[in-house]
Image 1 (cartoon, one colour):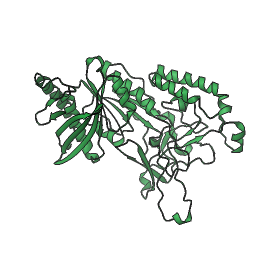
Image 2: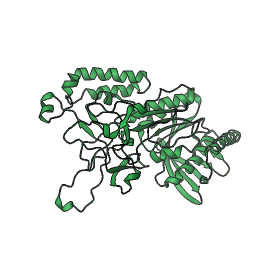
Image 3: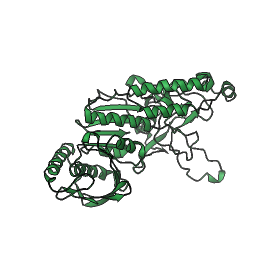
Image 4: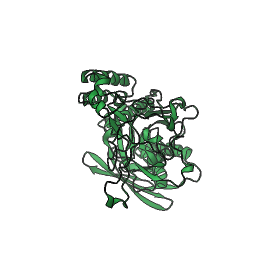
Length: 439
């Protein structure tokens, strides 16, 4: 078992340290460096946090983490899982800290020689997450002698990470970012533009320490419960994996990441000016119904809830909000367009609609909200398209054959690989999926 004595800043860890003897000088120096970074990040009036315990114990191939953080007199338990690489890259120790569980980035981090620590922050109130992370990151950096500490999270957990001493952050749908020298790569999806308070148009130049990538046509939540239209299940993981590699190289080698791909002001339009295709079953964009955001910090999925708002005058009216421009199919034209969006088989949106009540006896019941985007498939051929009066070209009309579709998918995927926005193995996965397209 490995234990950190938070009071004295000492550590004994069979995983990351040979022994306590001869390590105090390095540990204290690392801890002092971490504390200096924290001091530069912490704002006035920030909550006071104290790490009371940080222990690990063997748990199969991984290490189970148990931590206690005291924040403004209240103690909170934090559980986690620590995985270590077979061999640190270049002999330098680095770690990726995630606030949501998932193997999408963890496996890649281990492959690249980074340790991976997943922290369960679900039991912490939102206001306690930032001070807890500040203290945890400082101790992890010093006690485990990590040369680099990277972080990845989304939503409110991502905002909390902005206050800790990370070297680099990969954040999805964050609203707050750290100041330089921390390097940040941010992403967001289509659902960010269709909330009660939508994402604002960009203002000013982006700092050299930040990159921004809009993942066109994606929506974080994929729950099908009570949704009127088919659910948009397009994955953001391929983009996140490529961007983690870019962040790792940026912080370790100084290799500049790919340029940002985010809608400029010219690539945005007023929502009321968009011309959506007239297709049966196509959900109406949010209008008087406002879409609010909530994040389940345990599994990282977004929950979109629709509700009537009596203060709609303070919200962005549907017709006035700025959203990405769309093509004749209803698909967005800007941002990072992954292969399955550049060569679509459906219209992908960041909004959906709740099913109407089907039974009269349910008229007084409140049905659960639909928490997903929509995916409205293209017809397979011209005959099917004309039968349903779908104005969008069918798959056969736009691609001709599956063979052409697969070959073109390879070209699109390989281009993104060259641009360092897609990993080769993910490019292969897109091509393999194209072979099963519903022609």
